[in-house]
Length: 340
Image (cartoon, rainbow, N blue to C red; front, side, top):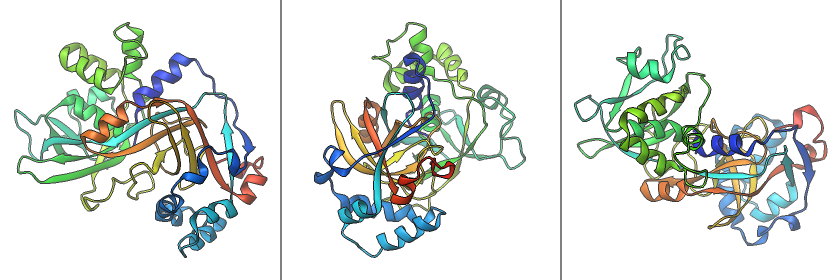
């Protein structure tokens, strides 16, 4: 998933921030704003859903103990140290969600925009977005067709979604891979052209502009050569979240997407998100995104559907995030294997 990629790319490019080598500072739990007021049991429940997939012996021991039902706050405070990881860039929180879009299992004059499965013939990385959409080299490997090209574009940014079929049934699709081309922010392009200011650009303004300017809009979308392939994941129950990067369902308002080169997937992460709707909450790093790069960068999962999308689309906030590391890792953080 991939998260609110346009917001991150605009922010990174226009802020001119250069990432340095990460530094690690051990904090105390008293340093975490709002720590005592959080629902630690809710966070522990989400943590246990993916901690068993962390392939490290000491994490396996912690996970086994977590599943025995310890007092949640005591568990985290006893076995983890809060560590602030910084790389010279200011914190940026964005939001993402699982969209629900109109689509069909067969093409028609209405449903013309295909979602492709990951090619099995080794050609996944051969073509750009424009070549895939114009030349249709993967015809025959469609999962479904959508009614709107902008919906398709943003579904690829989000990385997963539900498709509502004409008969009222739904299928769910998830990220399967991509073509390996560099991600280009269309929001950044519009800011650089003077169409919007940095404060004005959002998923909604981009969507409206592309629809109002179909030819220029199509050319704008093709600027982003990165292309995402999907797989059907309809076996995930409707009351569970979509699959994240750990191939497990993610949880609204408890899952974040992070940079896995810095933050270990499955790790608990304390976030202090500022802005109009501040959050002080223990999350779990269960997802990634192409625009989620750096130590102080996170995408908050807001849930499924229109309301979640409206909430997620407004998030471009500062603050800080603190990774909870097992004590031995935290105390020996300068060793190469600790950089996670």
